[in-house]
Length: 394
Image (cartoon, rainbow, N blue to C red; front, side, top):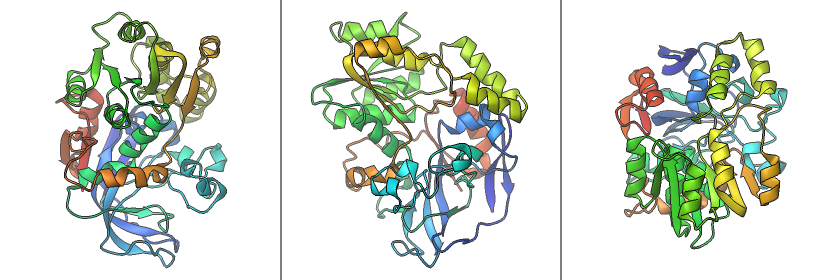
């Protein structure tokens, strides 16, 4: 089969690799019909190469048609249309029984002290071949895959794999109250959907910041107030001015380690990606090389006794944290990988009709063949051609 493979820092290529096969009775093989590029894939593209090997298959936002199932897989069958969650969970362990699917004890990567295995996401998370390919072996398929109906294009359901469920969790964890004010940092795919979901959940006002014109315009189409951070001196001050000096009731930090405005940390992060693997791992694990600009914006913009939900991906361990300010303000923090299947029952009914209340049909900006994935990665990284969300078509 053909698959998008990591070949080095800022270098990916589509290669011919062996077809996946059933290895365990809980496996399934799914033929990919759509598979998206995620913002966190850019972390692998640019920064986290020390945890990858040449030839690793990337991608964790897949859907397709079931081709084959193992003996213990009974809830799906060949021919079914399914979305595959990005985290791999068993549905049976102590964590899964409590809805913490991103911490599944069956697939935890204990060697690295990490949570549930993820598709296409480094040795830290199991080095499981990803979904930017023609076929995907799905471990724990007795539980993971989400069967979806016909009647809509893939893009209506594809984002259950990550974007929609991650954004739903981000909004739920932000303690949104009816009529309250929500502030979202970053208007990439997660920020876009989080802002829309916040409105759906009853927020009276949703404000978001970014500097990419196409992202700002997309958010405005969905009733989001926007702040272009290139046009204001102080984003938190602008949020305070819009909220009578109090700050936002709920803040969602949807950027992570792609944050702008922290040049030293940006240099350190990029430099770590160029070091020999063993040295780079030490830098990431202990030196703390994340870019903290978006987090600091979030902390400064939230009101006293408010909540900050952190859904942007971070990798450093030793970044300075403004604990004095957070403690004094009495801020609640929630964060972590999305527990995908915890939220599916809430979201799926909103997707099956014709009205599209979450605006899912207005997210994908580029649909390209799998063979053009390397160019799509470069375009997505550089935010060229109005690129907000890329869906690959194997």
